[in-house]
Image: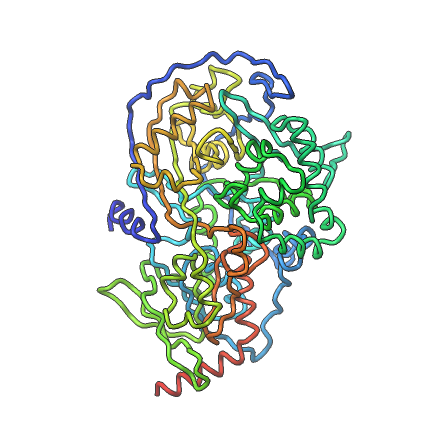
Length: 598
């Protein structure tokens, strides 16, 4: 299948549209002089900006796939996970004579891969059926016909992604994560860059939670003194304080706030509107593609709890290169090395089922594959590891008589647009004009970036943050920008979106105003993360369902984290645990179904 055909096939799935284009035409703009501006009120001047870094040239080969021991895998999280619900106990090795079931998983994203790894480690037989020509779900990436890596989104690994780190440790690729400076960086118009800086040392002693967070919020120049005082009042009266001494109790209080928006909760506790606009809205958009007035207080306070109680939870990491090469390929190799099978272009068209003696449905097979090559596959256990629109499309309508399935239809996805722009220089290098065009010496801000002044809320220069696949000889910055809220721009043409994104990049960075955008890619996803609005958490389904041999996985399912890579991985662990719990009963059912077929 040609690359163009693959793009068309992918664009037809889950409302995803992909566009990319190359152009050598110079965008007309004049470069502004990079003189130092005064720094009133703690403003970070351009010349004394301390967050820039020069990135070394990438190694020519990917890191060795170091195999981890069970102790190594456990050590990535046990000492730091704030709640037991966020990091389940390690499953016991399979007992002699324990059921070894055959499992069919629909969906090859992180939730499906996580479920597969857990069950393969228990000696199960696992098949994954994926409709796309590649795995990864929302974390997927691929190469276009010219060799450019195209991603479905910007993927950031917080220090509290313990389950994902565990999965990566199993696959031997923790080395593919690059740790960034412990700062959250806000880029305002005209090169005004300000930090939320969690780095706190007294002499040679590193000061951790919660004091590093207090220092960060009291010293950030992104907020005025009045806004910082209002922030302190709001967060000081939040469940986060209880979490410092009673994490489980604090989490219960946070769950109880799901029915109100973060803006409603924040302002009712003394928080200021300006601080939401300048700091919390960009962070909320980055987390859930929603602003503070639309996102649940539970979602935001869940993250704040981890940041406040665990020193490294707010440390950002980025993959050293593309997700396909640096994350998904090693996990695939782990799955296949243990006998798992991944079937690409074989999405599930129908869940086949019958009524049991108790009147409840039980699955008897899946109809999978493209129309010309459809086939029916059977297993002991069936898992739908999908996102919200995928689950709605797959579930039989008759099953909506069960509240757990019907509740899924109350959830909706949020649209998002991801734009990649390649330049002939270094967009975020604002200290030295000569370095901007020196393609032999990469320079700029090597971290995740936020902005309250543009229609993209978070962004990064992939050539700096993920150099192994994105730092290319003779080429400059590769800006990846996430547009949220995306609804107003979904009808726009891809060319218009790319042009407007490039215009706003120049708006933020004077250093970009004399550069040429040489290539761009636009990816539209009509329904991405589920909309974590107030009151939505109660509709999230458990992994076990009323159908005894049918289970759910996916970051939208019930788990204590938000819809994210970590949430997807955690849901896979919970799904596998639910299967192991009822394995003897499922094995008995499978034997009954097999006997009936005979």
